[in-house]
Length: 298
Length: 289
Image (tube, rainbow over all chains, first blue to last red; front, side, top):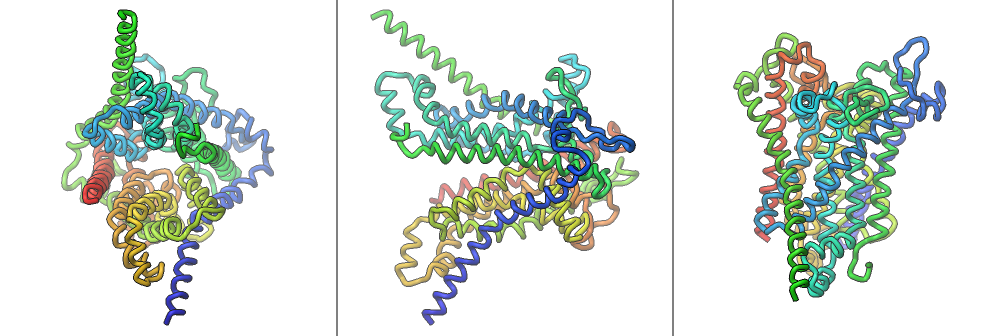
């Protein structure tokens, strides 16, 4: 009887351990299958030609070119420009929520940020196409409304919620004594935020920023619908571009199964996957190395 | 001391200025949400009729309704939750109830965090290579459900863990003190107390799966299919993919604008409705505590 209960208890433990390991299994399978389908492209082209090549003509019969440097540059440009918009917005909203807002305001603003996060990306892309693009053309007098700036603007609102909620957690975990000490010395609330609270939560805020950038670089539907789709290096912020996810999503349907084009798209997926993996690992590294545990960590 | 009081006034003025900037930034976020919603409601509402919601598309998708897309999206999101919810809850039980700080726990957390960061189009590629081709499920409901299930798994694990964490330790101690085993304690004491919180996570997972496009593009959804799915191996139409197709690749993009607005409105109403339900449920739970 007793043994039976013990055995059941152990069985339950190992069952739950297995389910917890499932995420790792999934991650491993994703990596394996991406590489299995993508790596054979390097029999046709070298890794350097693939990553640094400037010409992306995968369907050219006589002389196909598989260079994704324009796609990588486009992805980086969109990510950096959208971060320039999203970082101030996200961090300032986080400071507002955790330091300034009254209880009632918080009850309104927090759900708003959450709902913003939940908007389907295809809807944001649609909005960029039918509202922002004509607006840019008419008011700003840009030749193409679907461009780098439009995509970055739409992406910014997708990464604001991530940046905001992660930074808010970081600001909350700043020890109370620090804040009180600063106020007791005669600093105003704003001076306390600027010189004590933000520096103390800087590691958490950096984690938030990197996670936000990782979200922006991997986001697909917005850049597919709004970025313009031209595989060229941008020469202004109003140039149409073709980031990596857009290229994969737009061309996969027409790439013949296991053709070189198909392989090249999977290889683009590998590059994209590695980018987000590096971003995420950096974010985790920062948040673990500089864990805020108390006043002593400063 | 006139200078000191002047200085103080200036410092206070800086604060007022800073506060205004913070309020502005917050306001911009709220404004973005409001503008998108109002815009879709104003343009989409006229397209919403009973027949729009209950009929299939006609005349190469320039007329008719979106019924197959609604069915497809509901099947995809509910199906993916049926797979992901039990798995996610079980994983959360291990992480919160069994795991001790150490190498295994760090390893598992690393896996979950990185899985959460994988771009949705990469999930799509994986689903294509693994479920569609390797398992031979084809472009089907099943491939889409399994791909989406992996995509929402980190969301479910996160919210379930939070629900378990909020169960007071005194509950566990009382049960263990009465001689129950750990498994009995979890099953009969901890889980029932955590269920409402986990449901919030399930709703969030549903809405995430319903709005996802890139992950189902190569795995489950098709341009147009005249029939409703008859088995889990049928391809389906889905709301988000339908919006994308109509807006970018339709036969007559300008003519189908009302249909596009209508479809986007149905999608956003579905997703925001589920999220509001989750937020409301969570607020009620916090009040009870």
